[in-house]
Image (cartoon, rainbow over all chains, first blue to last red; front, side):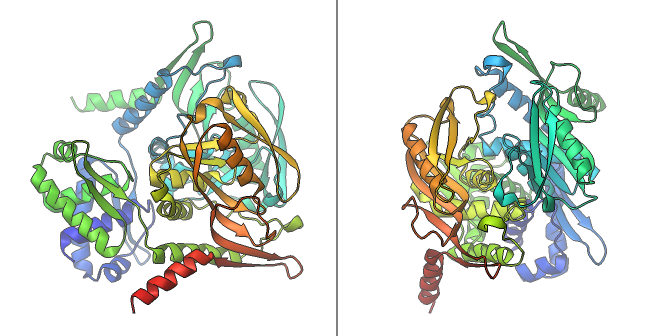
Length: 279
Length: 279
């Protein structure tokens, strides 16, 4: 195999396996090449990714070391992707009776969801989560793609008890917006004690569901190291959780039948800082 | 940019966007290189992928033409991936009261689910589906990854009516195994009339849910061009649908508290044929 061929094959292998460490020895066997040659190949891929800002190729030293791909986005790229979703949100008739927002089309495109997964992974990677946790149903796609980008398992909390879950831990919680008592349950064996979990959901009004998920994690003796939600409504102002990150703010004007969306302040701030630093 | 750098960047771009056609002009602008140079780069990537059997780089001629990556697996690779899942299935205590099988751990690994998505995409690509359809909840991850590999939208049918769905079409159906009346509903605007849909689910006993989904597609005036299910139980023998593809057969022996699994016959047959043709 020539260098350019090895680079095509290695790039595909790494990009398809975010965060998975592979040793040089393994690559050497797979591509029948010397380790020194592969080091040079990897250096080229690393430089290219760095130059184009399309992710990071990281080398880990030591006996358990090797190389891995980290889908790390720049804040500009995060802002670009969130802006694209904002545009889609504004472009359609989405207001339903009761001020609910139709989002199914937004969550239907696997490519868009994969892009959001990378955004979430970039934002929460430094908290070193071991599991992504979400509640059925609409949060599952984003949570799965986030888990994929971080290469950690996905745990789905159910709203109804299913026989195939086995023994479950069930909890009642109060939905923040409708003030109704709701139930969530999770398989006893789904989540080991002392795990570091990242809670992900697509949409948040008062935050009752996220509050419930956080409490449920307490029952499992797990530590919530991050909570991310794609879209947050401006109303109600008082939320039932405090420690979370949202990416899009959404305001509904039912009289005008219009919704207004904008990127979260932290994204605006970071892109502004970054823009300044380029001056 | 040198050739090896361009190849790293182009490979990443293509692999992350299965089935998405990109014109040479677009690549030329993106990488600031001549089209003839890029043609040579793409030829190297195409040859490498073909040689290693890790997918297909396809060139489409004409004004709307360009190049795209198709995550097409060999039957050997399909068999290898399905065998790996069989091994996981056999390796743990999974039998729950009522003969239900615990599968949540299997569906928790995003990497494994992504691999299954490519298996399903390879199997059903030739039917040219326009949408992947599944019913909440456990089928969603596989369905999403299949949709991602085919680059088509995912449509999730709900078991309960959610306010954020807007107007829905609701249908009752009879669960095949428990003989209970169940409900499924789908947003009126989720699926355009005359769409070609691929139905995907993770698990099938008698096939009542898949029968219900098929009927629901009829109500939406859509054509079911394929039905794929990862795991099928050997009992009951009589299924409520006939035209489907399963990948794993599972037999439960409740007395022994054991499950027995094997690859579907079509996979065994194809790998056998292929093995012969190599003689």
